[in-house]
Image 1 (cartoon, rainbow, N blue to C red):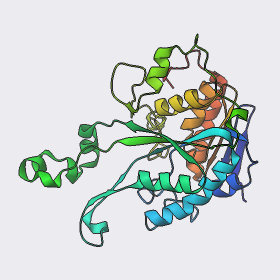
Image 2 (image 1 turned 90 degrees about the horizontal axis):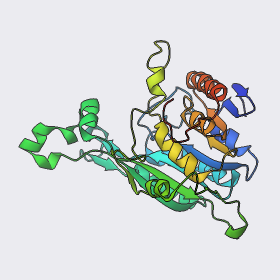
Image 3 (image 1 turned 120 degrees about the vertical axis):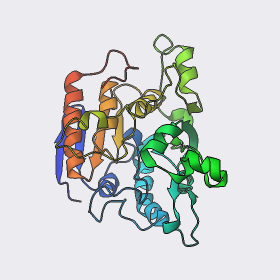
Image 4 (image 1 turned 90 degrees about the vertical axis):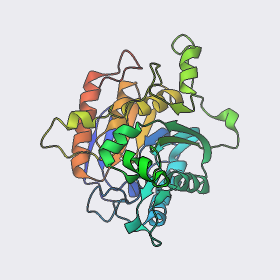
Length: 306
């Protein structure tokens, strides 16, 4: 295993490294929670490296590259604890189809099946609402055009939601595992009712989700920074961190990107380990992590202002 660079402090450890090799070398039962967005198969190419999981020919090849990481994440996670992934189904078009059709690829289901095959228990799926108007303006997708709705609605689809899928490492004796505890004074029943929602909608409740609530907003102000293509929204990460880990525990992101999961972890009083193959993203992540460490935990754990 070659570590190209690293930054280690009291609260975080970040590595510019191949995450598959790094995770394989981690101690068993050493992580309390992992939260991340896996590469969306071949949808994006994050680097020219052969180690980049985005450099694959198809979804089957991606899952074969992803499977060893999923297996080792199961090994390094403490019994009874969880991993949460941010995923979505993928659109394919006629030029990528052997029979000239167009439709959807069940990428979410593929990821679920890979996790279950490697020992994880499928625990929960949360649907994340996304605005179809914003998606149409961004992608110009044939599936969302109003003119197609008027002229031939069979061509149209609908907005593409995203998902948070949670898996749990089941243990033979679950009673012996370390629980995640929430005190009623800090988390009244209303906060649990919000966390337990099966979908995150745009409302005026705490369980709002904002697709623009990402570290990309900050990076976009830096003309010399390279944009991270699909960052996980900070508020989604915060829900997982608060619900599935205790303060001072250790979170892991094998696809750290520009450091979103790490920033949220530090802001909520957790420790963080992250790996990233792209050296530019790694450099941005270290910058964000150092800033979050200096700022310290947020006094309001539900704050989203980064």
